[in-house]
Amino acid sequence: MKKPKYIFVTGGVTSSLGKGIIAASLAKLLQERGYSVTIQKLDPYINIDPGTLNPYEHGECYVTDDGAETDLDLGHYERFLNIPTSQANNVTTGRIYQSVINKERKGEYLGKTVQVIPHITDEIKNRIQLLGKTEKFDIIITEIGGTVGDIESLPYVESVRQLLWELGHENAIVIHLTLIPYLAAAGELKTKPTQHSVKMLMQSGVSPDILVCRTEYKISDSIKNKLALFCNVKKEDVIESIDAATIYDVPNLMLIEGLDNVVLKKLGLTNNKQPELKEWNNFLKGFKNPKNTIEIGLIGKYVELHDAYKSISESFIHAGAKNEVKVNINWIHSEDLTIDNVPKRLKNLNGILVAPGFGERGIEGKIEAVKYARENNIPFLGICLGMQMAVIEFSRNVLGLQNANSTEMNNKTPYPVIDLMEEQKSVTNFGGTMRLGAWDCKLAKNSKVKNIYKKELISERHRHRYEFNNDYLEQIKKFGMVATGKNPKTNLVEVIEIPSHPWFIGVQYHPEYKSTVLNPHPLFVDFVKASLEHSLN
Ligand code: GLN
Image 1 (cartoon, protein in one colour):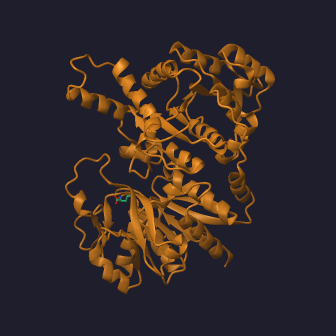
Image 2 (cartoon, rainbow, N blue to C red):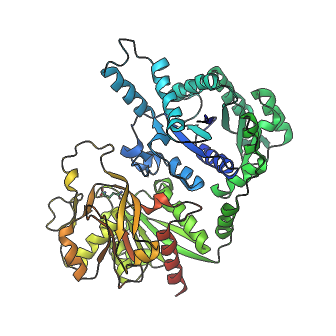
Image 3 (cartoon, rainbow, N blue to C red):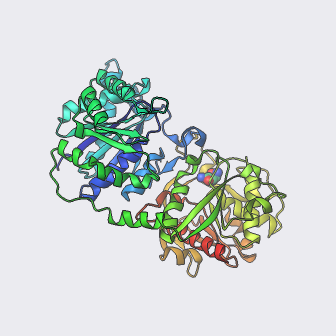
């Protein structure tokens, strides 16, 4: 088997420069040239995975088909590359230490003192190379989380240093993403922070091959020359990454800058196939030339931080482009909604999405939003907790089951319409113990969802502990809410809809994790379409 080539992406000066987007854009260009590419994220925090993190800390927790709870950058990788990622694509310091400590307890180090070098770095290097061993990739891009100079990134940078030697420089290169700040008072772009961050990287024995420079203004030749001189790179290896209107412009910008060319040259790969980005640009055309605008209410409890709902907002971009509609997301805090203000707060919306979530905070507001959507024929999509809220609302207000609830919120409710799954009852650990990853779902004939997906058997990703309580299946059906998607093996309810409503669907799974630029998710596409129809009426 041919050995893959490795590209390491480090970050300098500040965080939030968009390493994930640069990595994904480069990967896209390489993919367009015919290479099979994947991207991996190394996160320097000690949590085993972000599953236990509050979304305010780190944004959304993304979920892969194989049930890994991961950093949200993996969502960008999938959305750009249109191929699934897996557990191996996200590694945290917690996971590295856990496996080293487990080995130590099993006596696998044969009495040796277990140390950061070589034991932790060996584990990191193994994880970096794992993707190349299990699947066939021509190129593996590894993004090192954090900023060069952070204490917790040091073992990762050291592992990169070792790998560069072991793999040989024609097989592994380093891209350093950095910031060129603009000083308004001086009217100048400044290179000094980059010089310092490259020096810091060099102190760890790693010399960047390519600099990608985030900037608000065009970088002149003289600045490129200066960066080249001070940072041990050639001028052509200094790539400008100017602020873009949308992250989806970045592959084109990197193409113009020739990032893919420089990378291929350094890796000794010859390839004359120019990236065309045909389908990608088709999507951009739809996205940038909307014919209409719709207002979607996203009701959640982490709305102050839009990253907490990253995959949902990106899914709306994909679905909007497909419908040539601009989707305006109205971020609505569920705790702000009351019976009294709901009509006023939601009256201008063409569609209402009740978001996933955990715990009691804000659920009564979500229930009010569902009720408003149901009674006023506004297209409604409930995702995970949002679907559970739709069931609770229907049980309380249509079936008349007072105080119906999920046992997550009230374990003494007289009507536990949403209840803990049997196999969850003995679970005591929080991390990685939910129903996670891809599960099959069979859609009912003649249902709206079946029409939308245009197939009977689907597979969607999950992240939850609670489920629709099948004891109530007949009752809700009698009153007009139908379970139109079920797991074929367990009979667990995956989808509910109200056929008498123009568009009312709740899904126990997370469709947003599977929407990509080239494959917008059918549920979002149809929800946007229905919301557009609502806006035109
Ligand atoms: N809290 C709910 C559960 O665990 C829903 C989870 C979610 O929305 N992801 O079932």
